[in-house]
Image (tube, rainbow, N blue to C red; front, side):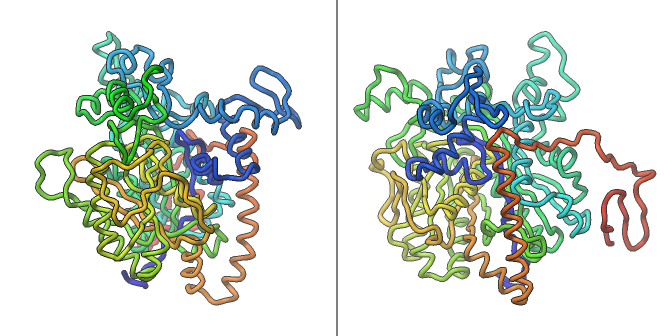
Length: 578
């Protein structure tokens, strides 16, 4: 890899999934809840209880939703179980996801990784019949921008209007009643399609919403669809946009809300789903009780005896920034994108069957990691977020890939985790879930274990792997890098190597003279202070969601000035240079 390329650093992240809100590492901390000290556990519980609408602030005090005054700490400690059972993979909420009983009564697949019970992103801005994934987009990108520690306008003042790129979207599309679902069902149900159904159902609409209603972006935009590897495809585009010099800032993300009857029915038809019948058969074969029915919380069991995958919903975003701009702005840095590779499988016997592409992506990322941090640190100070879907095919194919790569590079016990055991498979954002969790590991030093799997299946390759069935705790700077892995239908494979904050800071320090870097550190303190203020406001339910409908709309006839050397847009400080 060329050392002359600009460095793409991660300067912000945010979103929402079944574990909770992403910024301030809160969703990650919920994954490792039992390994945290009480103070941080209370913060996680407070954030979840606010999201779920269980508590609210009244003046300087706190009340339950029913109006009872409470001592916040006492309430949280007394309700740990009830707060946390309303997140992660759990029984599908019929009234929200399945009012007609198609999923629960006909398909009989009762488990899904749903957003925290009671949280509705449409409550925080005028949603205007937006599909759920687009509602989650608005909330998620607002969370990422809020955590930056400075206003978006401060970023725009430092760059040209066209030096921002946005890559975000879904893998399947918006299939609820406000998107393609409404479009396809309307005539059958005796009604007419809405004028919004087609447009808002498109897979790239997440990026379009960010441009039009949050950032006011006029730079590059798009979305690279790669099935379950979609987030990493977008991450690759964001990294390359910064390395090419075309973008100084790149918003990378994905949002998907696939818990609909049609999508669940599709995966059920492919025999890929952990449905109730399969769950009960698995429980019986494992010697577990079946008296109370399916154990939804353990429906997804990566690398163990398992029955299939579980769908989840998520919206995840990271703000990539060219390192010199990050230094100038005083941006906090959570890591950097060192390597992303995507490859297909070649000739296939079936479109859903695995192939050789993922061997290529992981091998290339491991080779890049050796160049970045050295062979010793690759062997001793890296870990892997596996795709880990919970299907029998995945446990053998992915474990073989990871074991072969580990053997090739002399890695003896490579730590492997798979967080779909908590979250389910969110399709497009799945590797975004992984990335946000890896940033959390550098904050706390804890890799979440695979809580739903008791023992590894006999056909799992693990000679060179340490597949974590419990949380693994090290010093927070122990890991120099992390690998993210994704395997998608159709031969869409992608892997990424992410550098730790500490390693990223070393690289950044080498880019500028000592005085300028010391100045950066002074500004950084103020950035971190403002980021903390944002998260304190979120802990009281003030999420500062940004939605700018019909604001500062530019008119081509009156708001632009064009010359042969460039273009000036009304409201932007700097020109676009030709």
